[in-house]
Length: 113
Length: 110
Picture 1 (cartoon, each protein chain N blue to C red):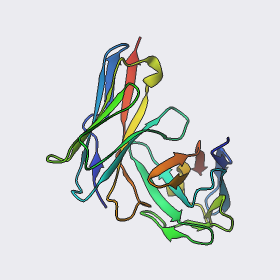
Picture 2 (cartoon, rainbow over the protein chains, first blue to last red; picture 1 turned 90 degrees about the horizontal axis):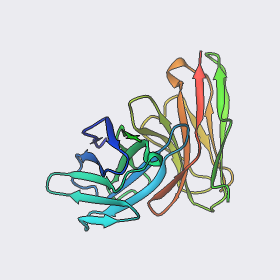
Picture 3 (cartoon, helix red, strand yellow; picture 1 turned 180 degrees about the vertical axis):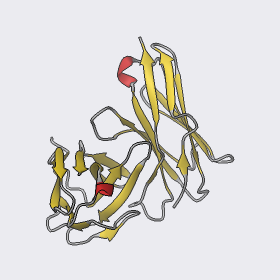
Picture 4 (tube, rainbow over the protein chains, first blue to last red; picture 1 turned 45 degrees about the vertical axis):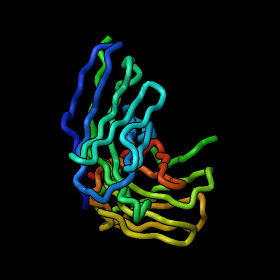
């Protein structure tokens, strides 16, 4: 299957700082990407998505950047808060079969007060 | 609005026992999925369904069976549990590309 991986397994940031979580993907045919947040003991929760025809998409305090040239995805969280502490997953889908997403192993974000 | 509900939340099984995990969604979604999550790994797709009465294999289907007799329910069965099936299981449902996950079932096989 496709390979979706994360550069940093654990990221620690100070409250109020910005966080950047990275993700690499290997399937150049992937055309849709999602970031999920998973808090301890809970299921993954949708954060933001982006299609391959976009380079950037913004939500509330979050921005996703897509660099198709190097097959790299990042999630930026502005003014990180303690409630942002969680594991973040990226997932990719190649579009031809939207039933199947491939998930990375996740990055744990620790927000220090 | 309950979303996706999984039962049970926790279960301990002995090797060789069988059990069924139940997933229910109230969003009228056509697509439903079962994933397993192991430490240090991402979610891996076990089986999925594109509608009532249909099922299909995912990445890691061996040792599991599923049924989708009603649109709102998706059942995952383990006929003869093995220690390798110790994991956290997540059910999800989706419309378009956006998936909604349940809270998970932590299964331990001893």
